[in-house]
Length: 194
Image (tube, rainbow, N blue to C red):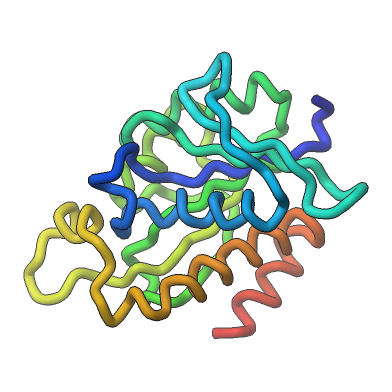
């Protein structure tokens, strides 16, 4: 594969126990993208991940959608393996993840930065560099004194589940905008909606 491809890594944890949790919203977004583009996830031969290779449109940019088959705190290994395997430059790596510091139902885009206590981002930044693109999917802060680690591993509340498909769709739109138009234009469009 040539280096004009994009790698979109959706963060999450494996297994049915975590499937509907806030921490798995990254997986939900790449699954939405695979459905849009007609891609099917298959186990990767050289990375601890499943991938779906597709295009945004006929003749459009090639995208490798990926989900680690390991746990969140080991996301760096699969990210590094996939970047090397596909020869994707780091300015074409998009990591989609849950973000406590953004209200639920909001999406923010950026390049680089700290990990903010997010173990998946911490591991990717250690394995590669912190200077990759991020689609930050807002899940909001836990209510009251609830522990953040406990909060992210719980399913979305019933009031959130009604809006979750829109949030996932908006996040998938943000990925498409980055791929098709670049980060700056994507930020202007996505952040302008807030």
